[in-house]
Image 1 (tube, helix red, strand yellow):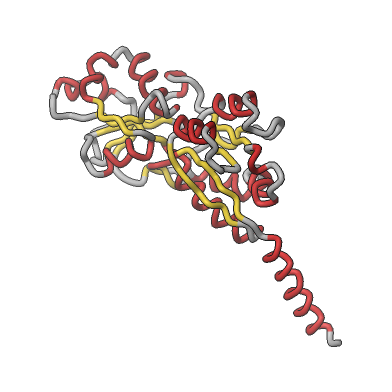
Image 2: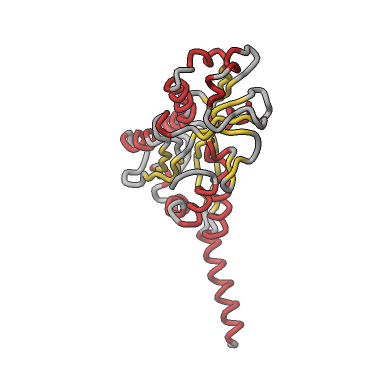
Length: 254
């Protein structure tokens, strides 16, 4: 058999085997990680043949759903507490937790010039205007919402802004409030407004990390995914250079 025909046959056989073994992994991903995870899922499918089926939302809600039997196989949390808790409760696989990203909080307005790069807008007269709304995620469910309240408290301005707050279930809803201009400004994940080293639209203040608890985002393999090749492959893939490059491009640390 000619060499080129053998090579073609080998490609067909190995390609067919890859398709046979390709699987799906059900992923619960923190809302702030939506955009980078969508890109990672595409790259993951190209490189491995596996498909990552994504659900995005608040980490607190995912925790409750997993406790009640939701069939997720991997959790990409917005904090480092929830994965550890799931392992302690027997719902997460011991030894699989790792920090896949370190998040950054940002104050953002869709309008240019509203938010200055020092965050002084929070100290200014806007807090006295009854029509001005400040969006943030539910601090009881979303770590980025908790970080927003911590920031306002540290700056000593939480009492003046508290009556202006419009609250989303998660950071994606907080972002939507600002994006649709139902809120003039809001606390969002930097990844939602930062692409390739610059703000995509409007004005932004990147909140200094000392103003709130660290936003370490941990991944955990859930017990429902412990024997699933696609779930194991995704956990390994998130540690690889292609995934890390995507994560960095959205303003996260890795």
